[in-house]
Image 1 (cartoon, rainbow over the protein chains, first blue to last red):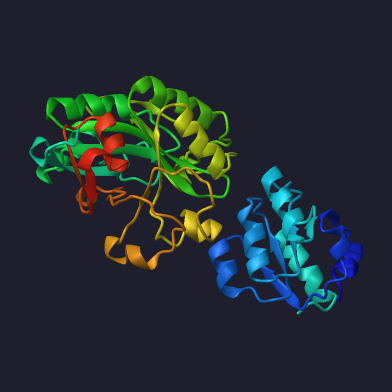
Image 2 (image 1 turned 60 degrees about the vertical axis):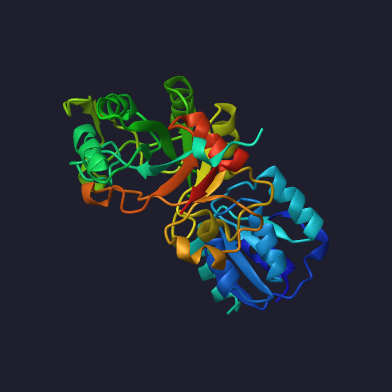
Length: 111
Length: 247
């Protein structure tokens, strides 16, 4: 499944990486400790988090994640957005909380 | 001119001690008890760093002065990423400017039954009142904003217990953000400092993070410097003219 399909199904707001929505999503990772994301997320995963600090972009980039969904309607810091654009990382915002975003992704087959 | 090593002395410093103002600290953490223990442990300098508040510092300083211990006023600030940062200040004016900035970015009311009492005391261990803010909560400031504010009020910014699994900059943010102007890092296990990738060369301190009387001074740093003042500590963290931190 592509990021584009997830954006549509979950009604996400894309705030960076609009041109890279055809990336294939291989699975999901949810968590807010970036040390854990570094240790346990896998290449191609879509990452669900409430963190908005610029370090999320570095983590997504180094782990080659397919994109980041920021939950609870939180808006990333300016520096985060800038880095996301530089690193070409799709970043989306959902008004839902982590539990529900993860549940819905699982439901549509991201496992 | 380079200082002769003979001008300098070692000062035992535990820069991270909580008082009964922190909801998670023992109620026995009163000025008199803390100072008594600090003296017993042979500490020359203590840092008073309650969570998101400094309201017990005036009492702590008065108690410390009586016993000839140097007390430095600080706040352990929780950033919005739930990273703990110690801000240490040279005088009460700067300290309370910082406290005001923290308070205006900290929301919620304490639930004493669940989180614990937040006791404001005087130097005679008498209760002056109870702080009702949610001191255990996180502020709305990013780590960058916290560090910048500490510096704005002439303070020293130290990332707390970077080798802990929670509330630490490395656990929560994966690594130390490039360009973050921390003055030092606090480490719980100094022997493992070489195993931590900090990105660049930082000065390390170690301290007790005491929430209980017995824990005061169980870890401390030795500051090799001229005298026990805030400005000397600042120079020591910059390794100025042969000053150094030994952990």
